[in-house]
Image 1 (cartoon, helix red, strand yellow):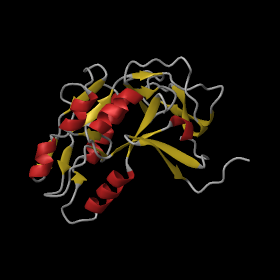
Image 2 (cartoon, rainbow, N blue to C red):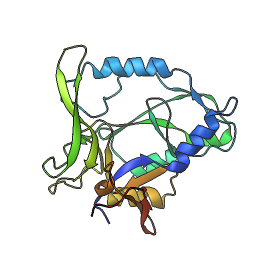
Image 3 (cartoon, one colour):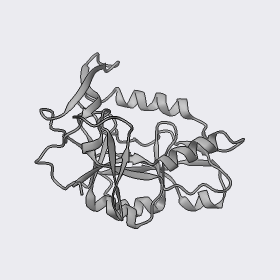
Image 4 (cartoon, one colour):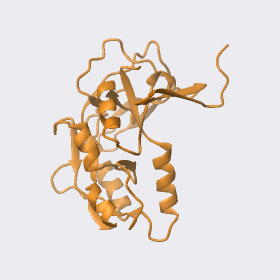
Length: 235
């Protein structure tokens, strides 16, 4: 198995969110635009080289969530800017406050199942270089910090992602410094989360991350699961 895995929302979680959004009074984030504006202002205060999630300061807005009255028990999901983690997932992660920050939410609607999940905004603060840029294939884009005018470069997408050989096993979870979205976890942490029975979360082999990959490999408790992408393998 891989030593590290990319954290992803599972297909089942994506479909569940999509299904609930289409239902009357199903699911939603009431202050989506407020959170986006607040996050943008916060990120603009950071150095151009900073790629981790910014630590949310005292007084930062809470997500105001409408969740379904029944049938919603995901441990991990995306809605608006934040990623949400249940109490069970937080306990399985077992990370210190300087690695993962959990921000409270305002639950506007939701049944007993939702209340029992005790959701929090999951903010991954740890960030470190992880990609072997010489062996990887990727497309780079440039961004600008509006507050300072500083430019910065980041990986927009990968054709092939290769991790550094010297990557250590601590911290157990972190954001990849070379791009804007990738979160890696160690194999031990991925196994801990899966043994806890957490739903809504998948673990993708970084070697199959590329947009041109002909198949994807995922970690399961029973072993590696392979899924074809429909693309032809390189000759």
